[in-house]
Image (cartoon, rainbow, N blue to C red; front, top):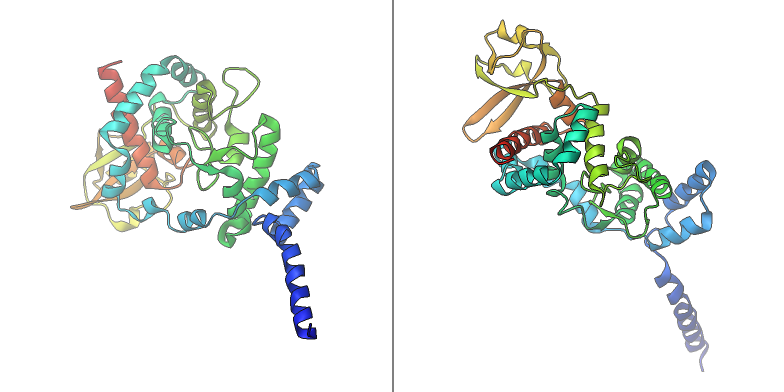
Length: 332
């Protein structure tokens, strides 16, 4: 056998011996960011290094998640198209049905946490169609992909991955099977791990905070989220401008009230129904097919944007909540 052929055969044998090792390695096994994350979790929280290494050996990089987060479909739509996604007869009927089925828990949450039950129901309807679509991605895969393979927001998702690992210990969540959205949001209300840890509550006092299967905890936790962010019971959310011309300079860019209804009334801008002159408001512009329409939004609208910063999302939740309330009251 020639020396060249001998060397070739030797190389083939070596590579074939390495193949099982290479195929067994996960998508993040040799990722330096993953290794640094494991080091931090061991140092900061006392996690077992070998167990974390085994966990991330199983984590999968999901290209479909990277594609989804780079192009969230809803954010490119004008209001008149965005609204049609959520303000549907099926979602309105489903909300009234959900309210009827869980009226006792909703009433208890509304009373204890001083929130509007219609908004709690609407959030669950917008997020997961009342629990029918809570997400098909492994949370481990979603958060690992975004923490270690999505540089634009890696810092944020690295923190959420840290919170997820801690949450799993606190609530006995199975790290390998827990499922959620492509961004790692979980349960009926789609709480990201940090929100789960900070705002989820054990509303039925059974010793766990379960946002996948415990309706008491689900409703109580969504209500608590609004309570903790400053929901003002009985106060307005959004009122349509029906009189006056709104210049572009008055339109808010973050939904945080920075004017009063009285200041705008002095400019001829009024709503139906009218607002107290002292009511803090922001001016929101929404694009309809025939042109823009304007709303004066209050602190409660801003609170909804703490759940999702999009004003289109917040308006969808508000309008859906009002439609659900009407359907529920017609047939309680």
